[in-house]
Image (cartoon, rainbow, N blue to C red; front, side, top):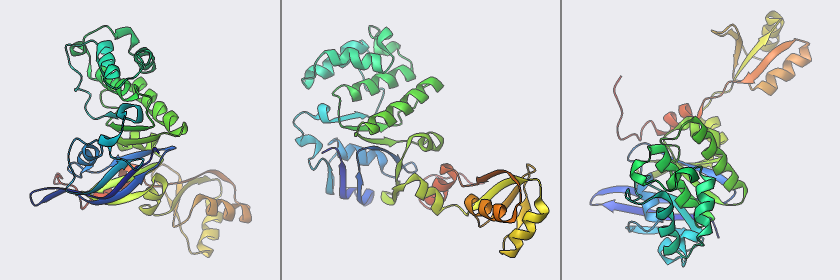
Length: 303
């Protein structure tokens, strides 16, 4: 019931296709990172999913139903698209009370989400006095208000301080552990790598990847091991017999291209070579993402 289903979704503006035949699922029980360069179609996809725009063709459904057909949408879907959307003249509490009344949500939920998002102490202040980070927390509180099974969050860490970033990271993972569907759009690769289990990547309105984060990184990484040993001579000779080379790294360690850490560890154990440190040297999510989207960036600086 909580899954998101996108099927052949297309949105055209004249001859330009902002979304071009997208098909993918977002499943419960994991945090899905929604990535892509500016203009890739992420925001358009979210708007189509929430019924804020009409698709040219294809479907975007939640549990098999369009958002506009859900009887109590805030009970089923919580969304943060724009932290600036709250009326500046209202207090934080009254903003949430208005939303609760509109969708028949018990008023006790207002105080619960104010506490959950850490803004209960400022609930009586007008939103216009809030910092960006406080507005972001209020937007997340609004998304959580109906205790929904599906969460759509667009740049949820924007404006948050380090404590807030850790909090939202733990919140998203906790919601997924409870069996909810969590889709998070972000431009911050370091943050995405800290919370996402699965990635959906767009480029020029088309699907570039729909797979686990590990698979995205592994597909764009050449196996390489970084290590320290007290006997590089014997290890170099053992590696050479298998067609591999031990190379000095800049930091005083050694590297081996084309092998994984478990393979080097097994070889060293077999040869009786002491290994003091051993790890796979994989590409970061940022490196893998840039490689994946290199031909799909709408705006790119020259070097």
